Length: 225
Image 1 (cartoon, one colour):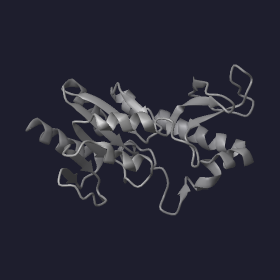
Image 2 (cartoon, rainbow, N blue to C red; image 1 turned 120 degrees about the vertical axis):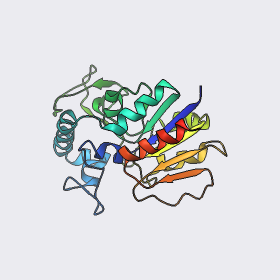
Image 3 (tube, one colour; image 1 turned 90 degrees about the horizontal axis):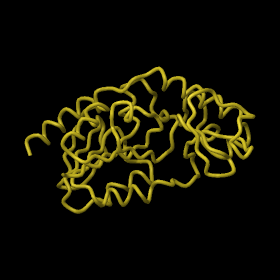
Image 4 (spheres, rainbow, N blue to C red; image 1 turned 45 degrees about the vertical axis):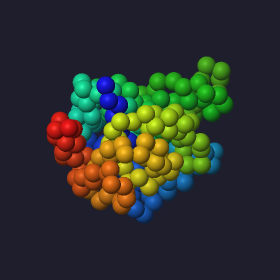
């Protein structure tokens, strides 16, 4: 069974009503990214950061997967599929995808500020919410300036890809943007983006569409192979 590896980003979730990570002016929901998505921001004003992610979590629980999520999940009927996502939502899982790696963490999880304890979390998070060892918890999100723990595993998975699908990501945020360079030479790559970056590779099929319509194009192409 062929292995499809998917690199997904905010453009997939945007069609479900989730805002993309940040606007061109560097603001995220009106906040400077450095205030709400860095360890320094959390140390300076933890209440602001917790409130910010509480709002994001509430929004996530109000939206549903869209057809791009469902089409990616449906690929598992005919292929081995691994989704490596920059998204912190659970929409891939809710659509039925069973093998999802979250490079940048998960909004519906929390972790201790002192150790690696990770907890499921779908309600508001407050100062005074503690892990089992008595330490404050924080969103299970990889902030700017922090290591990306899953990147090495993601690299190894990309090396095994028979087909690569890039959808909903500008391929400009590293280290995630470098993952495409680890697929074997000659691997077919489908790149879905309404405003795609230039990827100079003769094996790349660029599809200038949003995620939902672009996935229909990919599925049609795969069925004809």
